[in-house]
Length: 396
Image (cartoon, rainbow, N blue to C red):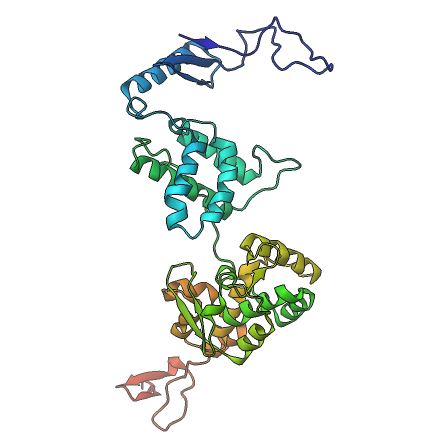
């Protein structure tokens, strides 16, 4: 057995700068610091914390780890060990880049995941470690961040875990791992019932403070109800005199919108600088990124003094589609514009006003009597076939 603790009663109690030495422990090894195992199998070194200060339990943990390695439970004897960081590069190169439109988003997420798991061998990333990461990310605590903790939204954490889940799925498929560690990891509960739409006054205030280039994107989003990513990937070759063609869509299905005067007015203001994209970043000669647009939008919302509700870039789409439905356009017309595949997905954009609810309630009409007059009291009526009601004859 090869167990050790990093603390010791023999090291100096203070560092050269006068600060307490965290490795000094007068009670070591009978202290509450955790034991670490450190051993080699086939010239490969394995070391990690046992996460316990009980030496007997630490011995049992080390023995079980040796058994797992020798039994090849994680395939360690069948292929060389690979760290999470190394496999993430393989995942990006061989899967994400050829097949995923969100590969740039995956690269950003891997910057976070590698801080948490990058140095670990794939089989060392357990369900418990992942759930710890999930909790810390939700609280805004993670390695590499300075300053006060900033809690993250459940949806953000879930997107990171979805990327992590995809990595382990491919690791199992490609024979780098035998067991998927995320089978027991549940996503955080997300409230997708965002109902925030901009009022006419808020919309005017927002457009007034937007810079010229960004104002065009905001106006086109409010007109078309398109997602920001769809607008940012719109190319001039997909714009004609009679339609817009969105190819980079969330569900992968292309979508066509007829050209209107309002859309044409916005596009006519966009300079054609020889770039393939309608909205091109002059510095990078590439489309603007969604993250960059989100940052610009938050600053515009602050300048417009919109302080109530959760206003984001998606609010523009929500506002546009909600107004189409409120104007009386049928669901299938709006679905052909928005790109939704079912009416259930469109339901979150339906926000009936109190007046419209009252109109719906007023569709009730009381049954008519034989003489064509509306009956007065239901308790004084009786049904006569399907023709209406007539007064009850008093008993003699």
